[in-house]
Image (cartoon, rainbow, N blue to C red; front, top):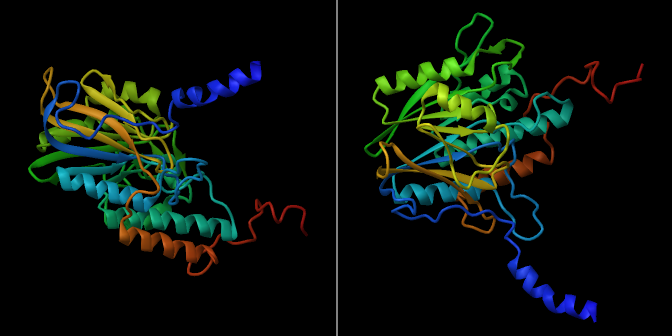
Length: 336
């Protein structure tokens, strides 16, 4: 009898259980919280970690570079749209591998750069994981990229800026300033980081002087640290990476709105910038949207992904692998 009751109730329990996919605010103007007259969208991605394929989800697959690019294009057709990547786009690990493994992940990093360029990425913040193949290789990728890599607090051994610290971006009649910081303890061969709060504050002030209507900080500090960064920098938006959180509803700290878009491209972040709303403004509503793997795809990015898959069948071709005589290569340990 108890088993029969359980079986009868099972459809009701299943229907009442929450969806595995997190959905944010509907694409609408005005916003449910009172803002109106959409000026622009600031779209953002974070923590992609070299992943270009949809996730292997059992029921509702999410993600995919080509699907993400198509969604960005759709939203930009509706209103002026800025698109930034907040860091950790290129690599999953912060240390190089050996041989074909390193060649394969470098190939995926090239895909991240090329796909962003084809789809119209405006700028990418440098995260700690993006330095995972070393500074020299990241600089090579930066020269390849049609969009700038930004970092306000990453310096070389002579205490000089390695990447552009900030940028003004114009779409339509709107002007957005953007800068980027990574943790102050980041260091490696040829680079070290300085205080992210001080660097962000200086760049935010400079961008406002240069005419930015809205100022964005791309942060690789993590969500908890981003709250302090928001207060210190006096930015309007802090778009984060590192902690891989998914904020379907933005976090407000002072005048700033904070958010992250999860990881591996399963969600696209969207900050909607309105002309009117409660308070002094700027009037920003932040949310995130799932990127469905069965959604339309950007055809040029599809070709890039397919080409990468073919190359991954023999990832050494055309790529400089790490020499196999490294003493820390696990495949050489114990060999004489």
